[in-house]
Image (tube, rainbow, N blue to C red; front, side):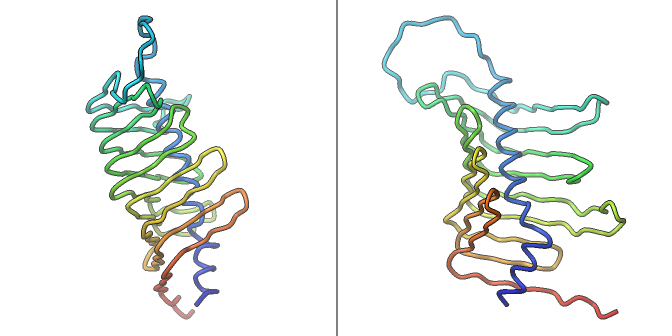
Length: 205
């Protein structure tokens, strides 16, 4: 069973945490740089945890040199807190399109990121979905999904952690655990607690 679980992660879906970190870090980068940045100087006062600006029902898109859509970020509302230099986004949805990775979408009820996007936390119904695609050799690659109630991504050190239940789906295969710690630099994935897997047998040729 352990070998089968390792095979699933190795062959198919270990890239998902990295995609999640990249998408969320990039999304926060767009957001922070697309919000107002030049405010009149004000006297220094004791910082309070109150937002200094809002964005509501916003959409930010990035295109490549040929005019093709590369990335887009949507949110119901975003708030910037100057005392902690953090951005909080409600109803966040991200989508990335590339020839190498295909279409990858991420969403959550709420996201919290620091000012430079090096740390991102996703709260509530967090998911990353890589759509089914055809690879460079012409083989069909099934859709892969990562689901959980909480993820904490550290973009600079390429780590993703959660102490909440996590579920990975790839085609009809599924793996679940009580928590996860993924280190992309060391290529080490730790699944915590009760780890369960349901693997579909390959058809005999």
